[in-house]
Length: 157
Length: 205
Ligand SMILES: [Zn+2]
Image: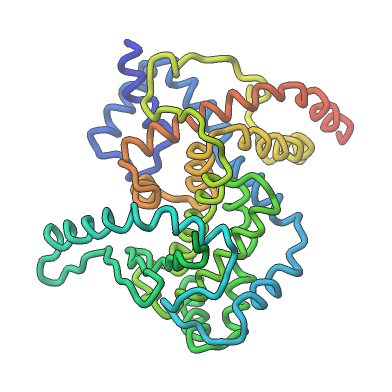
């Protein structure tokens, strides 16, 4: 049992059912059966598993959320959702973020979208990422749904 | 639950404020918990959670329901949280994802030597440990906090983590490994809480 084996297998400890390939899962099981160090590591990880979620949810549950929803509803105003329309002077930090990263990420994402169309765009398949610019805001159509990027002109430099 | 979410989403999309309000109430605490785990500061987490719902409301018209509403919601919360941290963080050396032989060294177990069951006698220990977990989590680098929070709180798989964070599955695994090791190391520093919690348990019997 060399440390080299452990370096390979230690990151697999804590994988859930189906997350490792069959080959990986079998190799990990064989290693764990023989390696005391990784057995102990697995036991320690198991002891803390779930504690982070428990602690954070406990903290969230202890906080008074009474004003939260009213504050959100105040911020979205009275209009119906408009999809990818431009923002209305929202928090400055949001605008600063997208201003900084939009120019960097958009070309990369566009290239990725092209890649995905080329490689996965066969009959009956839809690329899972596309980009559109509508007016002053940009919408990333990710596989999970649209992510609206705020217009950079909120913070003229 | 998911079908119920979609029904609310449809109504919210049609402009029913009560429906959107119900979605906010349904997810507000979990979104806040995710944000808190990543940004650490409770007030910043509150702002991030609010901004998440504002973003979601604005994007409802484009949400096609290809994935679960909650997946979309937490994706936005994750990105806003990470961004909030990165804006505030001063430039400092990033930890590598690679796992090296030295990372396997064991530094002892401290308070983690005993499994934490659901025995009521251990409630005091659990409660106190909850606070220590949060403190320990806060000592981790942002990328390690984030992956641990998404794995544990949102329950994302390796594949989903890779997609969410834009990294390879191998990196997901090694980053999670480092995050767990760091949590263990951070928790060892709080070994002192052990004795008090045990005494509380003894008194209840
Ligand atoms: Zn090993």
